[in-house]
Length: 82
Image 1 (tube, rainbow, N blue to C red):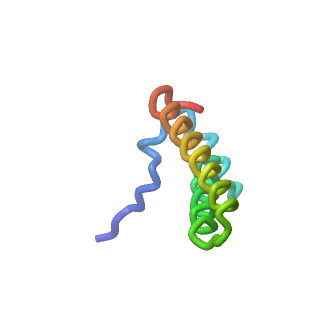
Image 2 (image 1 turned 90 degrees about the vertical axis):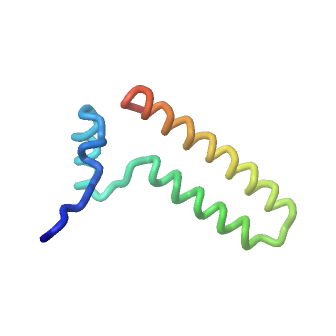
């Protein structure tokens, strides 16, 4: 028996399905995915840095990005759109 891949279609708000499909077909990821990728890169850089000043700057940027992601996701959950 084959399983279908859960692509999140049913969980996606109806008004966002077509825009997300267009982006997906064009090979473009949603902005939130890019934000998570940037967050991951910043965390890696923080782990690898030896400079205290650079570490402070990276921690600040990580904090700001985490807040921005949380706000975007909360807005999406509450309103169904960004």
